[in-house]
Length: 265
Image 1 (cartoon, rainbow, N blue to C red):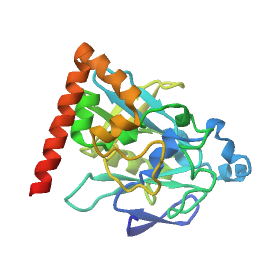
Image 2 (cartoon, rainbow, N blue to C red; image 1 turned 90 degrees about the vertical axis):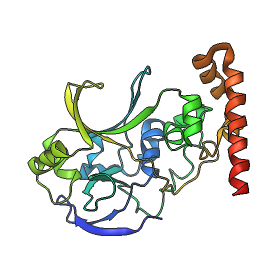
Image 3 (tube, rainbow, N blue to C red; image 1 turned 30 degrees about the horizontal axis):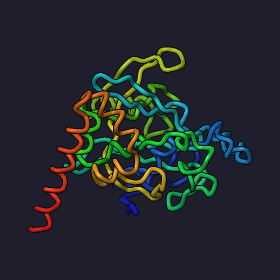
């Protein structure tokens, strides 16, 4: 579990916000495994009076030779920025929290996602993008061939910027993002009017509170292939043609050799 490193105050609610060393990877599920039509929010409509920041945040999946995919978050997701004052790590970090429940538990209505039948990921017999993102390097290089990346896309909007960086005025937040070395700005049209977005790369961390049975953490090529055989074979055939089996066998052999050498050490 993450440990608190500081406290800040949300200027909109005057409530203290716990800031942590790294993101809660559960928040990624709030982009990728939310219930269809967000039906789990039926009795929680009062929450939206607070107008949290999720309307202006997206998750961007992008890479060479692949079509960009944009994910919208659950409407309950709270998204905050914090400045990293240490020389290690990114200057700007993200804290993702459920706006209804505390950081130490998942909402009971969400606990079984993406394994529950009304999650859209339930229909996809494949690892989610975040599983692939934090997977071992040899698996990523085999399956994807070209590296893909995940970004938080933060809309350049005064109301949004006021919400996501506690204690900062919108213009101060905008200046901080513009000057940050790990943030780029783009213009994009994603199912709405043209807007400008700040892109902050999602860190590859493993602070996951919930382990999915259908989409477990990827440990190696063999385990992933056993779990999602048809999905991985289709990717390999697309990349390597009729040599896909040869590439798979080679990757598995290298993996077994490395595991054997690690045990000898």
